[in-house]
Image (tube, rainbow, N blue to C red; front, top):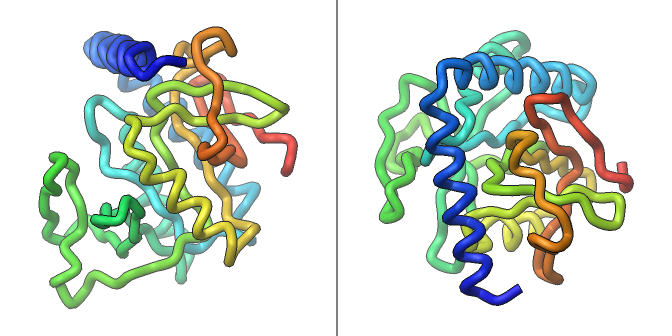
Length: 205
């Protein structure tokens, strides 16, 4: 796919998401996806204690309410948020709703590591918002914003923790066929995908 075609595809998908977010049923869809995520985490409770979420940006699905509930249900569970590094990777830092936050150069809300309460964490489950998604070679793949931060980070983390769980969060309507988009060699497959119709697992699970 040509670079201009990929830019146009992302632009179209983001515009569609912004329009759908204005509809009255959007909050109900968020709640439904949050319920599917809670179910998924229940099935992976034994392997998930540090969960990395994302701060919703550009009408991404807001999963903070169900994840705060999940974290409070059992001692030892921690939530983390990503901070982008200058080398194109992400680090993850602890997050509590009482923490003071800062805005990155890209306009994304991030933890402030200068606070004594904020600690660097290594997640065993990472949630990633999708601009689009596809199914190829029996695996689910994420189309993101194009910066490659998640792909580089996952490749690095999976070297030391092959059991790392990576979960895409999106909508059914974001599904892309192979004529629209195909994952490239640098893309990292997701272990699972959660949308408004439930969760799906990639074949290597």
